[in-house]
Image (cartoon, rainbow, N blue to C red; front, top):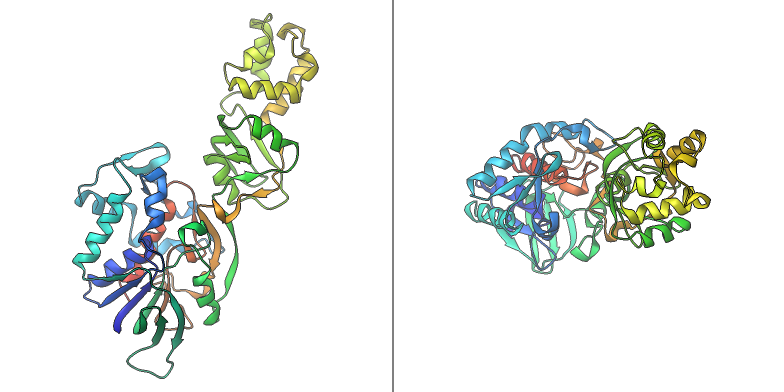
Length: 398
């Protein structure tokens, strides 16, 4: 079986690359090892698919080369994808921070991609394992031979869109990295990103007791902070702020929780002493924080003053408590890892790829797109936009 383009991976970047190559009347085949296309599309956004963001900027992407993503993101923008969604009559809504979600189901986005593939005469095979890839260095006509569970295949252009290591139950694997190493393309260290924190010290018990409690905070490492909500779980900390910070966190670092990011906590407590002198501190703070959380904070930060009225606290003591509420320091033991990570950090070294086309510089006809590449976006539709943009620029040239 001979094709102009073979794309390994039937996710967001692979399908979008296939669409754009097919629209150029290339003979395109997509090979997907699992039983279904676009599994991450279907599960994303709680089944509503956070398909892009209104505020796509390079600063919201993490890479050893922060400039690499600029070309693709500028050549296929969020507005281009939004127009495609609108042309297919898919209703969507803006949520906080410019995040765009389907009003209906993520299935509509996958159906749109399938429809575009059909119109571009893209062939798709699921349940297809690629067992080996051979480059024919001296062949003019065909550069790559693939041995697969469906037989031997040949192509001039080979696109690896098989993703990273996150969520192995969805079929994630190290396939893209194996192919990179086969062709002597460096792979930067990978680790789980956009993933909940876990704890093994006393905070684990705190998190278990508070499981299900959500609170808007500023969560920070020494070098990065996010003002978003956290969610206490029986394993540790989740929620948008925790997921975002996990992509920047280094193992062994402590993180700080500012529990009242919209308040000057010290002034708040001292003013409360003046204006609400007969109120218990826990009752006062319950106006701002979940009651379950306040009870735990009391046990941690003022355990011997649980029935002390505000008027009985010295200003010095209130300042001491305020400092702890402003910078509650906790130390994760790790993260939940690839099992629940939304993305894989690191990956194919962008120094070995063309930012214009995603083609490898030392191996003509071989391309890497999407999550496999060392470009990782923030939470909120950024990684899907990278999939669309990187798939698009590759699709224009393969």
